Image 1 (cartoon, one colour):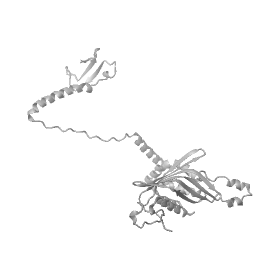
Image 2 (cartoon, one colour):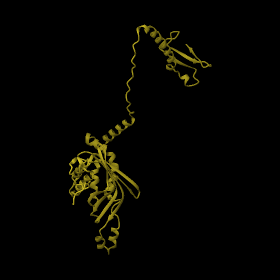
Image 3 (cartoon, rainbow, N blue to C red):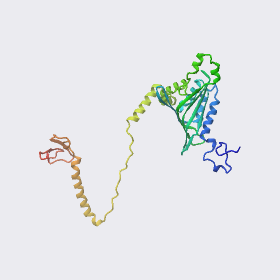
Image 4 (tube, helix red, strand yellow):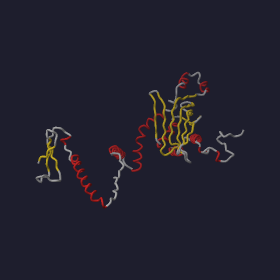
Length: 331
């Protein structure tokens, strides 16, 4: 049987330049296959260090994992960060699961500058339960994975939307307890909710509280502060970010270059400039000395102080409004 280009182990006879732009060993689906193998190598003695190493191998430092499903009381959506991902996978096995793997069918890949997105509308999460009874659970839904486009190719975002699930019990077990109504009644009850165990669901509910506390835990670990001091510091910094106005870009004043003029017209231009300056100063005076009487009606006279002395040498004089609407100076 000859290999075809669709075979994952196919090697083009024309050299590497005629293959796909990413080699097979770093294909996204192969990374999921490697993750399944790593989960199968788990033992009962696997501790938190083993799960941290598992998450470090397959998830980015800023990765997020999202689960969406619908329970009896309505739709649910849980998103956890990188520090909580190892514990999520461990709770799956703590709920009586002995085996866990993912099957991707007809997935679509899209390549971007720094990431690769895998969209699989027919994804199945298969879990093998050893207790309370031997059951195989197939959880079907849509899985969207975003990988970093580098040598490690770790998962940056994981979003699994569960649509339906099935719990399969072997016929041999049903035949063995065919004469026992109590056992048959127990076998007819579901052992999961939307394919997730109670251990996993309780942990996801707990993550709603744990996820916002990640900043406090990180600050306590970094600065060795008490929980109360960590909370005060985080709240104070958050208050500063809310109160502080957004930084506006500084604008440099534009300076106009003055053109040199001929010496013959300097005298006429200087006299014209003085006339214009005096006219401009007269026009700016009402705007600069805008009194409150022009804005609020009913005010008769408002003091108007100026650095230039009046007729009698006073620094302050007042302006009165006549019935005709004209201004009259009062000393």
